[in-house]
Image (cartoon, rainbow, N blue to C red; front, side, top):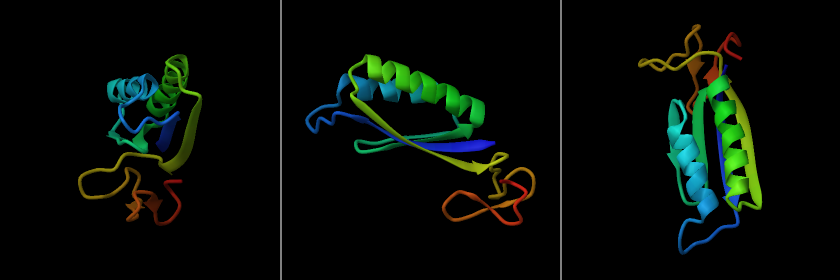
Length: 108
């Protein structure tokens, strides 16, 4: 199973990245994930379930310890396999424009 997680840590600081945000970035960039997109107002990671869930566990523990007062998460199942170079999910499904598995339901 593949997962996509979108997350933010708070409190925000528009002048410089707070310690909890730097720790969150360090966690996801150091994890064995397939995709990591870190931005000032939201972050997205993708990968296999074990890697993503392990990263989320570390993210929560370390960012809270570094001063985060709130962590918001959204977890989406995006398929059972990986997306190969021709835009297909392993197992035969197509990938929709939003990156989710589409088609006959074989891929979740």
